[in-house]
Image (cartoon, rainbow, N blue to C red; front, side, top):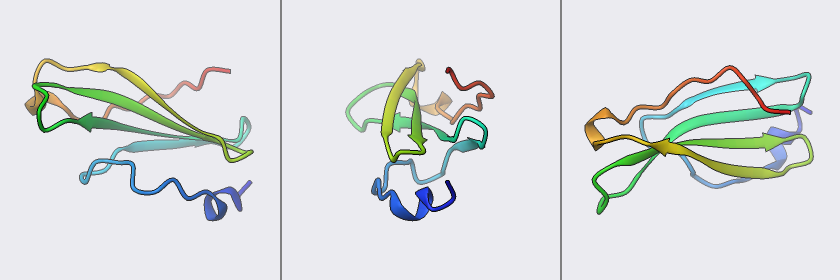
Length: 81
């Protein structure tokens, strides 16, 4: 499981200020929570990036905010099964 992080190269996916993350060793999943910002859009969206043991990578849009000034990464303590 620890070798997963050495083997997975997802490129630079996250905003420059960084996001929150957690690792569930029992379910063997790592989740990074960050915001997706668009220069031409008036708002941004919370995003979850999930990496599982077999090297699968999934990006999930969790919703948006009213303005870019309110966009900061959120923290979540639940991983759906």
